Length: 581
Image: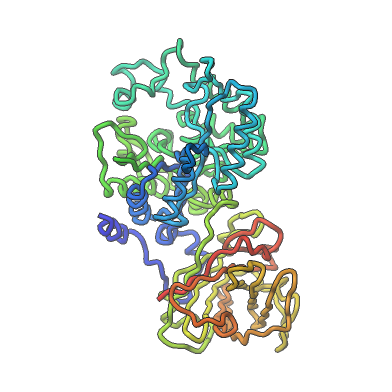
């Protein structure tokens, strides 16, 4: 099945390697490229803590073009009998099966909520999870509806005892994905007249229409907004379209009011898709920085695609169709088609044909920024070349069509996307050299008009592309820096922070070609392996690495993996360079 999915995915996904002399700006706005490069982020998944569940999930994600999943049901950080906690076990399995493909959110342990020290202990849960690498906090639809303390008191969403938790998450940069309430139909009569009866009769515990047991939906949403207002330094992602998909005006109005409020799309495209498509499209465009792609894709003993009845057993192919319908909703202007989760309602939806710049924000840019602190370290892959070759800056050697692309397009500190300046890097290797190829779009070049033959300090303040490599796994402060400018100037530095050896020379070479018509400069470089490492390179060798690009005219310094600081010299934020066959 996994091979079948891979074959099917090729029907609509372009090859990962492109021809020589491409325009990175075009690829940066192409949804098929994003899928081929597995750039899409699913902010809302639930994968059972078993290796076979993650294996199945990854097969589907690979075929659909999803690169990163945020696992929201990982469990608490509370451990028992010396065993791993639920969230730690889920993280361990994910890392063993599919390293770098999932981030994990924790859930709170409410035991002892009625005790005076619960808030203090809850903050300790958050801090422990943060140290373990947990990226955020997930709150299920318990608050205000079902979770009670030992005295039987229903705990509201805005209970003051939770304030220290929300506050500490903000201080640690841990976003909160919070589910409160549910569709309006879940408060309406529990019978055949309910428009979501097919779903409710299979899930009777989702019905909250008894006022003797549950508060109104409006009351719970009011509590939700109270928390957001009270904690402006903490980011709250209201799951399922900000918890109110039936009222897109309410969602947009509160996005305007609360800068710390976001929303994911998980399991609510069937709901929002029956809104007026032009009105919904306008709302997405207006709120393009606040919306996140998510699906509620779940893999347990059976798979759940947004929602499911008890008897449904979707196949892996069904899952691929589910994702493709998500793309159809975002990327076409199709009208009145059957949505991806029939049990959620017997109606049709219409697509909203978002502009590419909005699509990529929803698909991954907003999530990259939200998750920047926790985002997995990327790998820059260098493919083996059959033989050494001369440089010409044209990138016409066949090896470049085989080399995977790394994209340098996020600002160093803020992690803001700049697809208009998206810069690509490729790498290849032989026993003798490490080869690099860059394509850098520009608006205006900033460089010395009469470059000399000697290295010039301060080159980094002008237009350059850069590579940092660290081969000493015991000392992250030891690494080499390489820079290449569009006028052919180059600079190499050996560092052992805080020391910098500007006299060191790697013996590197480079050639540059400037495409003035399309405003792209291309750099082809090679670095002697003997200057990088004393050990002969072999497939599987991994070194710490970072990729950067300075664009002086636009006052933008771009990173492959943002350091989230004011300097590129943050070796703890490097990714990896890996040599492969």
